[in-house]
Length: 271
Ligand code: ZN
Image (cartoon, rainbow, N blue to C red; front, side, top):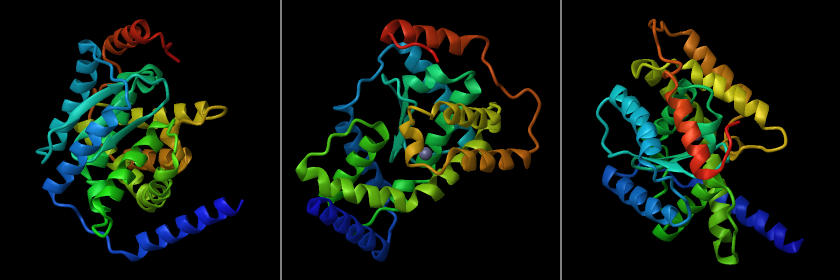
């Protein structure tokens, strides 16, 4: 009891420090170092799908989105993580991770493209780099990133030494989450039509998350603004667009082939 109260005080203090300290944007070089290091660390805890068809499929969608986004300062890496959790996330400097759970849950390619575009949006908008606090020492930032990633990934077991980092991560992530999520959604809605995809896929995927979040709340949602709010926001943005004819919703059964392949390789079932 006393311990948990102390933890709350530490969290409050960290939150205050985070608020009071000015945020500075990392240089591109610093951001790349941070992204590279975090990706190496994260890779130790993830199980990647190596099947070249599946990886190529996701990578292709990512490349189309990037081509529509214009020149980028980072090299992008689209990873497929074997995990049935409805989740996706990104690290600074171009590291994007899509769970097999998301691919299996997608009803059509526009939904999957919506999720990928959202994650690319976090990188393009440089959300971590823009909210980086130089006053934090490297160790803490490193810890924060690792924990922030674990929060998105789930299944993080905090040990005593990591508790401080975990608390700091919560304060850190919450500080810019809402604005960052809306910004990543805005990026997705704008870039998807340019990449040839119907941006409504993002909205229908939100609807899917909402109906599936009963007993099992996806971690994709837990640190984000509420899904209905994001749906409304994205739908309003789409309503303001003059969408061209012929935007892709499906891809001639390609997604279904990839889903069957994932089911065969991982034993997971499509939802
Ligand atoms: Zn997000």
